[in-house]
Image (cartoon, one colour):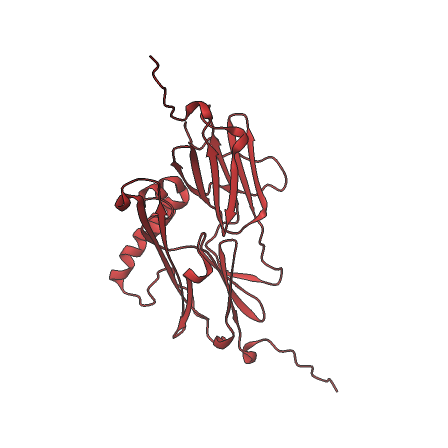
Length: 158
Length: 126
């Protein structure tokens, strides 16, 4: 099985790893000072490009990826598999109308775009991938192909 | 009003002692209310407790989902922790009218302003 790289780009290059370290620092700050980081980005639903935390689990039949993507509509979440890379994207546009007289200023458009790419283990049944979204958590079930499941073969001892 | 976090590092003495983190949140002010928005992914409606107690508003949200026993974690980024947010309220909040709404991991608390602090127009007589 491949090891999942933290960075979004599946291609590694030393130059690309530098912003990753910065992203990692940003993430640590986000964890330590959540209120501060949301201010920095112009609000929780503000205009920011971001990553979101993911977990990967495995049992004998499947891998399950769980991603925390609060506040999206189902139709705003995209799940795609291309060449062994699973990409989860969320794109949401919110128009906030206030009761101001000036129409230009009254409609504020906020856009939230998040994306995450994860390289997948081999031997998955790609046509059987299923996804569900509940309580702000996206769960993607990635079944293993039949031949990689552990099989128990009874051997008769004579 | 100081909608600042208050004693969020509170160590729970209840059992089981599970870690609680402050969710990512923001506060907005409108003409007649303060709106608190917090991200609490993984929390079911039934696992959300909002309590107004004198000076403070406490939100405790428990992550309801736990991996089945036969699953093993290959890779983890999310903390094994619940959410706890404590906000200090002052006289400007109408405590009896606090509303909470949870939608896809986003908690919206509406804290209406007390009538006394809303802008009032005073007619001049004579």
